[in-house]
Amino acid sequence: MYQTNFPREFKEGFLWGGATAANQVEGGWNIDEKGLTTAEVVRKAENRTELTFNEVTKESIKDAIADSTDTLYPKRRGVDFYHNYREDIRLFAEMGFKAYRMSIAWARIFPNGDELEPNEAGLAFYDRVFDELAKYNIEPVVTLSHYEMPLALTVKQNGWVSRKTITSFTRYTEVVFKRYRNKVKYWLTFNEINAGTFGFMGTGAVDSALSEDEKLQLRYQALHHQFIASALAVTQGHTINPEFKIGSMLARMQTYPLTPNPVDVRAAQENDNLNLFFTDVQVRGEYPEFMNRYLSEHQVKLVMEPDDEKIIKMGTVDFISFSYYMSTVTSANNAGDKSVGNMLNGEKNPYLETSEWGWQVDPVGLRISLNEMWNRYHVPLFIVENGLGAADQLEADGSVHDEYRINYLREHITQMKEAVKDGVDLMGYTMWGCIDLISASTSEMSKRYGFIYVDQDDDGHGSLKRYKKDSFDWYQHVIDTNGREM
Ligand code: BGP
Image (cartoon, rainbow, N blue to C red; front, top):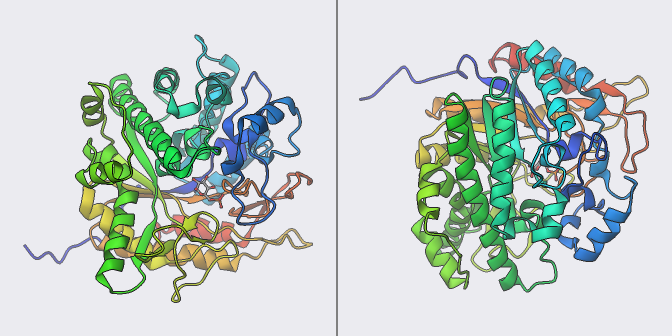
């Protein structure tokens, strides 16, 4: 039936806000009984394309454990949200945030990942943070594992490669679901679960000495264990509080064929499927057929237990959350072995600008992704990361003129609104890096995302003083008008 009353605006109660992650913002890496995490043994990259999380070895971990400083490992210091959370949350409230996406550091709750009893000091910290958010009616959106896990589980059983890690994870989720059942409604299981195909940062598994085929086998087995853990946590969470809304979280890799040559179009379709495979499993509750072919053609033999299919089918998510920064280009002969920027494989897109870190900026691609994901799944969507990493400059008067970030965000929010008019059910938007923090891929501080500038450099020098950028007031108005005025 042709309708003339399609939605034209973001819905009332749209969850405008910002996003961070414990390992990139908190600091306080070795206080209040917290254990070392996998993020805190990754050193800072020497250049913008070096991915040091891929170079972690058993030896480098031993050296890192012996190092009691934060000099080589920037994620140990973050931007000291651990002590500054009240001021930071007040600034988020001043912008009018409805939601704040954050993560719990598993190693604050279980320092070695599998103790019998949780660490009360860690639980108490997040109680304080959630109570501070509640003062301003800001909804926490909590990621249970955001590019970190207790390092002890890597040392003991190579992270997610071991099926035993599932039990440790669901013990951790049981504790935090119960502790915060009346303070947190929105939960995400694994941040960018597809990053497990990148290795250590996603799986906590050391595999740098293996061949590509061996890595593929190990990583898809680790990912299978994460799918089981995620599904068990969803079922468990719904039992503890039926009001919980628990989502999956995907790094959306929108890609286009290099030419209209059908072989390039097919190659792009395969890359798109390899990206949406993760959401297929977590939303539909089963492995898609194309993946069974892909795994067998790549000699990956997953070890599954008899109940695994039932567990995955039962533990499907309530919504899909995802990050979106850029798009890529696929051709039949590159098949992902070239790198554009520092996180992606692909060819250059001559129609798109590139960020200072080589990411191809593509606002229309966000509308394309929103439509594709809505049409494929028909479950609510939530953009929990979108933003521009840039080398912002603090002026002598304490101002930061980040017009380029306002333009990036305005263009992406404009395309979000188009997708809403296309009929997409969009829950919210938490801009990534609402406060400057440590970069996930390179551990740089100088790759700044925030509405709030933090005075700290790549080597950890600075006052940690916070400054409002020009984008701070701009975003406040966007929220105040529910996206009508940008
Ligand atoms: C995503 C991560 C975030 C965030 C973002 C920006 O992959 O989920 O943690 O860091 O990317 O990436 P980067 O920090 O490498 O610029």
